[in-house]
Length: 253
Image: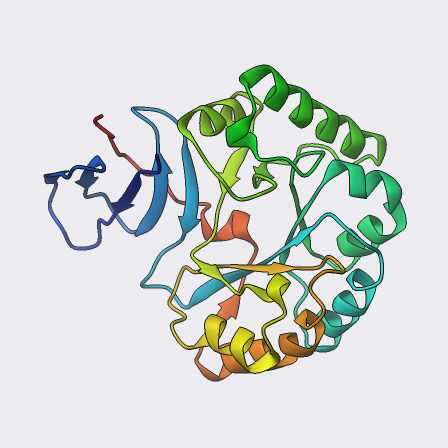
């Protein structure tokens, strides 16, 4: 079960509102300077899916775990559009096979996050198997001299309390998303652009793909970047988007 906790503190006094429904119970607490949104475990680690709604910052993020034909052209488009600070979540197995592309991503100024090692649904795995997959991913990145990766995203995007806790024990901050472009479905350029831009808000973490299955992503990126700028939004890496997110939340089951 996923628990959504929104922490908002600007110009508000300390207070707590207990919300109880048949599906979940969560507490909304007020803190200073930042509004964030997280999946939360009880008094434990959290998975971020949104930053400060009152900011004009968003984060473009790309999952990458398959193929070698789209990543370089995508990097070329980002570079020509003046965007050098997105976040790529890369699987360890893909990184092992394409070290030169991983290095290009880093050289272009983009941030690296882990997408695990193999494409597996972590919520179907026991703790031992999740630990093994994360360890394999870390080993793969270490071999490429990419150390101290602090961000991760689950391969399929599914999250549970156990997954959040295991990720935290491995030293990761778990990152989800607030906007799903669904570019992997190849629904058409216009539909992808509209999904991203129409309801874009400050703090959004936008899910896109750099794998070969996303055949239209390269075409939509100039349009998305142009639309972002026209609406006054600036892209920043996920780590920066959530850097000051000191969420205090409690989930009651």
